[in-house]
Length: 313
Image 1: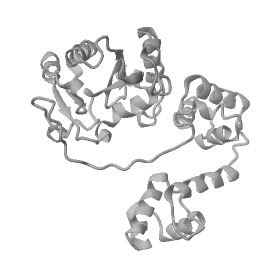
Image 2: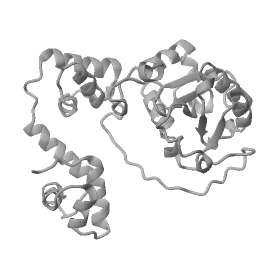
Image 3: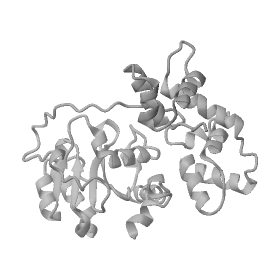
Image 4: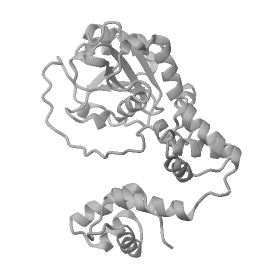
């Protein structure tokens, strides 16, 4: 039986084809039949005989939409899906998974189809990427940070702090227009629950350390580690570690993916506080509203439970 491939599998196929790996070995690597690989290349290859994973996945999704139209979706389910998209800015997968828990069936492909069919572009404006995607490559570069005394590398962080246990945090700053103003973002890795606070002293290290301490003080018994980048604003990390009785670790330079929880959180926040925004227009109350809104979004990694519910358990 033909098995639908995922986007990740298509990127593996592309990488192995470039390395001249046999189709039999590619099939074995991603756990499908050889005929699936041949069929995939034939149906979703480009006009020049090459294979682009992004294009292949898009072609496959469009073909599926033509075949599976979800004509049986009930009007009330469709309305609820649109309400969650436009009112809460949930992703199609979050909407589909959340409604499925209530016995309401609508696929995320159908929701994407609804977005694409909206010629006004209004629905696309409520998605995180505006229906435009970029894929980044990850490269580890030598860390040159010299502005942080007694810096402890992420490579010394205990292996159990991999996001599978509760209490490992990541932190970052979002900077305002022309470098003025800063918002602290702290994300718990397992639940993706996050805290954000406007910093009264901006990027000044002593002010950042104080606000980190105050933000995590209510959870001080559940702060096992904190991971951040090499910004000078975190140079007072030893004070944070001492006050919260924890350890602060620093990611490698140019490796933001090593603190993926807070980076992903920042992208969600940017739906409401875009780059170049004047932070003077965002009060503490407004920032709290954004925090609550994002924390109540269902997440696929949490089986469509919410960070708020998982953090509170």
